[in-house]
Image (cartoon, each protein chain N blue to C red):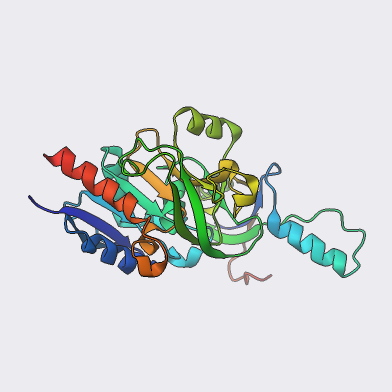
Length: 236
Length: 91
């Protein structure tokens, strides 16, 4: 059987593209290709990842200019056809800016860039990105961002709650979603958010930085493994 | 006709402006005791060649909605003026 193919978009200023490529190439069932932002061919990928970084120098607003890259037209079509798209950190910001996810990212409430390990609760384990995670499990995955303070109108938040679109929340080491565990001021401690169809996921934490024990955690693997397992099952 | 658009982008009033708050605290530390509020936004100047003022206004509005502002958290205000040919941007 052919391998699950991850396509990782490279914008000018992406800096987690190679880490993500490395991780996706390391699973026996998957492989990765890099997709240049000026191309308009997704190369028959099964999944698209918008990686972390500072696309276009975060000019104007994080993700605001990347959304007009030629490849993004294809990514939006791909997502609207129901194929999986994962945006990590800056990729999450791009997904919000291009309208595949609803809401916006503001500067962290401390106005500092925050780079640290956080605890995450998986609020919805019924998605293709999270099916390999146990509901009671607490993940440890690092964050590294200046603009991760999720903002949306009360109606949008209500919509996300009703559709179980809030996938990951910042929590303490006991798994409680409390204000003290909220690093950036995000509404509802949102760390990961999906669309209604659950095929598009935005994630502020970096799972690709938590895939080897030498890096302090392998919890990020569970997200990649969920994607791979679900896509293999869909292919059979 | 060449028009100059002066665009102000501000965070919507309902949104906490952490940058403004930090600057206000710093002003307080510098004994600017009478400062009661600070909001920080962006200012963009854009020149465009359009046949009429309504047309220019329409294009600038489009640019604000599509790229320059994020309607989830920001408002914009536009001022338009005619630029005489040969006039420097700074004038």
